[in-house]
Length: 480
Image (cartoon, rainbow, N blue to C red):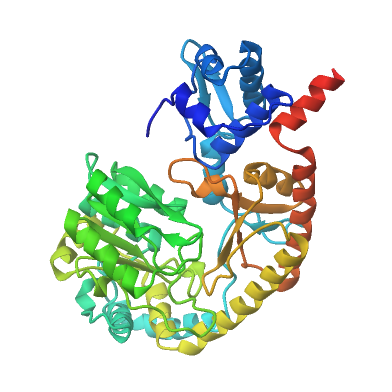
């Protein structure tokens, strides 16, 4: 990422800022630019003297504007180096919201945790474990290690892919301890410190952390509120020439977008041109909530694709099982890399998932519950927060809301004080920005989601009344 921005570029970005008074208007506009990512994080702003000259304002105006930025947490002064952009609490705090364990549901001191897009277990999970317990004795006479996965589970997963139009042999499947372990395994097997990986932005932050564990350098490609800009994707691939590209084409997390088959074919052509292997995350693929048919797997359009799957979203997080579906020529490489991490997932859980994959009724009941929760959440958002804009997701687990102004981090702080934990946009930004957005999952019963929206409404009213950084500081100066 770039580390400096010129005074002339800043002048272009802040053109037309409110000059009544100028220092407050300049601070407000700069805050918006940092918040929505047009000026990245960790970027050195122009010197006060240079910006004064290009904006044709007084030195005091720029000095006071920079001070407002620092006071609000959108900039920091580094001795002898200048003024650098940041977000309140720092980048790590924003990401910690998405990475840290939740603090419970409404029953835990009244806090409603919307930080985690995962639900309680649907009906049928306990029965699957009971069945697995009956099957377990047959495996107790062996060592219990299955580095590639329990053969019965490999076969069940392969059958699912074949039914979706992607013929798959059981030996193309490597079972892992969750989708994040699958992502880390692929990164370990296929990348190193000198490699580059292209990732979507916004993106699921836990996955990018897992992918970067190999030392690979991440570069971002934008996913717009309307979907993928495939021309921009092609340009990014040409510029970066990455080893891998991490994609979520099915109910993209957090936007909820689904990539059409035509776009999958176009994206696959871009990838082949640069020799880049797609790592496709299908964690939410099974959660189509409106009865719609889903596009065929991305690997249909590019056989080199490595696909990640998960039982955490489609069934229950407590199973802690995921998998990798890979071309035949990559399986041995993945299995060798797996042996450096662990010797396989627990047999009991693999048996339970084998049973669940044979029973579509459990998944359908899960989708019915999610559909009810989604509809309740979207109705409550429309009622209590009509200023927020969002597209109705056809599946997945969350809605990506766009705020009228870049205040998501401030909103998350205020909401937490009111008993709602929610992840602001910067937590999902690969290279900074996205402070106009907040992800709200429908991971709780309808009544809790409605109450959460009431609390978010109250928090948003406070944040809006507090106003932009310039207005808030302007009042303080006038009182003083």
